[in-house]
Length: 505
Image (cartoon, rainbow, N blue to C red; front, side):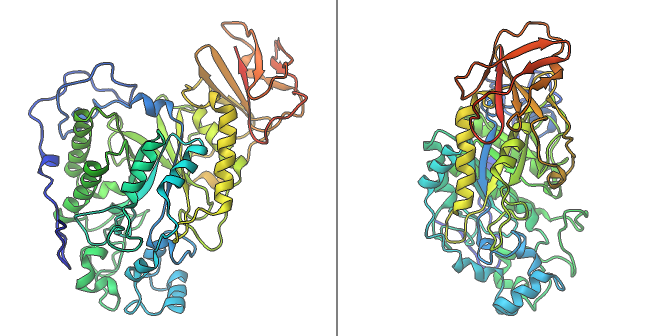
């Protein structure tokens, strides 16, 4: 039975999520997430940093290198410019506000809520989507569970504004959870709903966002002129009720769908520290009780290092890190959701990005962009299929690998920093990335070699190279070790169109 009250927030009882265990962990605290636990601990996690830092990154995540998720919601309906349509449509003077009023009318007559009935999703097919993700080579996948817009993509007892009761009238999270797990992938749920605080102009009664009957969608009243922004502190901070609702929604998804990974967008630092810790301790204890190995990701400094896995956005590291990390990026250069004028990245760019990230102890979470009707368009499918074909041939050099002494060599330099990916240039055959597994070292050349490959990093090795082969090819590779490095002659037959992995033993 759903407990819904119009115009107010109603919270499910999550007392179990807020309990603090009386006993504490007994072993030392790592400075960064480490490998899988060697022995299952019986003590419960407490809601403090020292305790939750005892949680260690599971082996499945260390081995997994590629995941897929998707921004899909009412913001997919206008399909105009960006998934941030829902905030910019209310911002006076913004081009999206002008577009909205010309296209749909004034905001007191047609607000964001009015896109929900148009978010039909009639072509959504969880089994087919999951099969496509598996074909693409993904090892973990899932939906954006709730974006900043306040619309829950699961069958929620906490809010009437959910995909089971409105819009597509399907439990998107629930259906994807079953389908993804049936494909032997790990299921992930991503949360962005801390952004909802001051996302809408709830002070402005000239828009539907300021009308009391819709407060359970648009959020609490905030001072006039207050908007949440990525580059500015939030003032005032959310109150206790907002914090409770934030926690209740995440706990509800954990309890109903058992995600293997919970991802948080940035701005989580506006949530009270105690509330963030309550979630971590609850999720880690919940996983232990269910014999489940789980991961939490965070951005910037929203959680303390060692308590979860660091995630970057549209960015990558310039060098190898000693700790496992994640980066999430979109298949579209400009938007995280479907737009009428998409700007897709090439398959080659996506594959090179994956190789570079993996060589530095990272993993890629690639976002795709379904239409409001639930279609994954042919250009997106083509890129996923080509990534899958490449991984089918070269996955040995990606899955289950570890970084080498250095990540690689070549002229390409990576610019670090939030949203910096556009500044990084395409790679060439001069760029080489390394991974290792067992007694093999993989040298992945990021374009087809038209001249001898000279790997200068292999000038001196503790052990002599015994063989060199090219993954996906039966051709005998010609090579020699010199004082200048390992010299590999270009193969006579090109296999594939993207990066090329030489296996050295």
